[in-house]
Length: 465
Length: 98
Image (tube, rainbow over all chains, first blue to last red; front, side):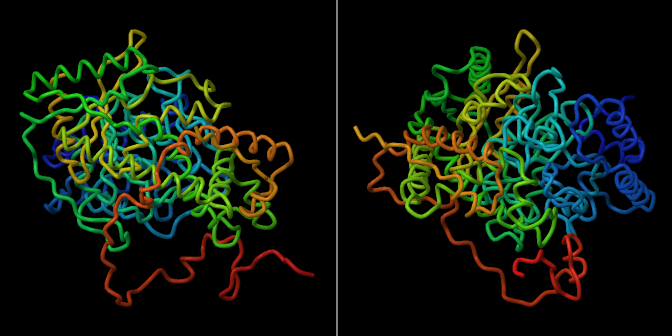
């Protein structure tokens, strides 16, 4: 039996029943990483010793007859912008090279409490700023479906790890699409929960009003299980967190909104066809497709890049060559040497948009348009229960194809950024492949705190597609 | 129609504000990139938002503050372990004045 092809649920059940040991599961995944990750580069740090020790602890717990957690023995890969106590956490930046956090992120604590086995830290665009994982200071990740293409980003390492069978589950973070876009390009499930549903304590901040931690999995049931573990009770260490309900909803009779602005010119025909297949499947499942309008969709990218960069310029001020991380002379020299080109670009833009004389024209203006985008969703969710749309305008692009043109790269997030600006949940679900074998996906967007509805429809669709 | 001009982006000034040492060619590249992104932002500036309130955060209701109760925190030696230089209870910084 190849243990790396099992779902998280299957692993958990087999470990709990004694059909397989957590150690055997961990060893199988570590062996696969050892054999295959040289060509994919999903991981920045493989937690070999920690994973085996955690697996042994799960096996000992079972032997002792203790109650096992909901992810007992399940390997989970962690994006390297989540703090892991004593384990290198770099944000794929030279400025944090060698830094070992003195504490665990809340989501990491919760995974450990659920008896999960943390298998390694995954690659990302530096400080989660990017859409291809090419901005990592430690080299790009490649798409397991085609090694000449990017896995998307910024959580490209986590998406590739799940797609390549290195772990059945992974955590990512999504500030403007950084879970959903790589999930779509790698053919796995990826979800950005409602803002506040998952604690951000220990997630290294990029844009605090947009950042959210979420799951990657190879099926919706596993993503749902991971969501339940990481959301949980309100975390007093993150003031914006809240406890979300998980009541299952019947999908029959739901109105599925198709936003006309997402389905027009510029959308790859294969991506449009995937949405059409999903629409038909929704109808077969007893849902009703309706057209909706999100008129400010095209404003999403410029609005996002003004809001996110202003927040980033402020958040990244903490890398001052004093409290942690790299020091090369004074703060300015350290930051000039330690940050990569995209991070500097965003710091410069955010500093500009929030500098004296320009704040009202750029940052405040973007915040006003942010409200218009939220109002668009409020109106759309009056006419439908869930939005069905493409997660990306085109399948996985070639490594290097957009690297020299920041605006082209930014536009690959055109269908994902609005959910972050509005704080609503979104999920990318695999939906077939192109003729050349590249994954296609669809995106489901729900009203705030209706994450269970998004997951329920995704699960029903997954079975029907 | 209102067509905003993309302003000059003074990268030397911005780099000073953001504490970023940039070689001249990198500063010039960043300046071009910033102007391109600001060009893209012109569409946002054309929208009529006179009656719209800024939305700083999608979660507009004020979350409750946690109880103001003292709790143990990380021991100091743990918290400062990642600092480039720390001695006798102080962060050491490069000399800034002769």
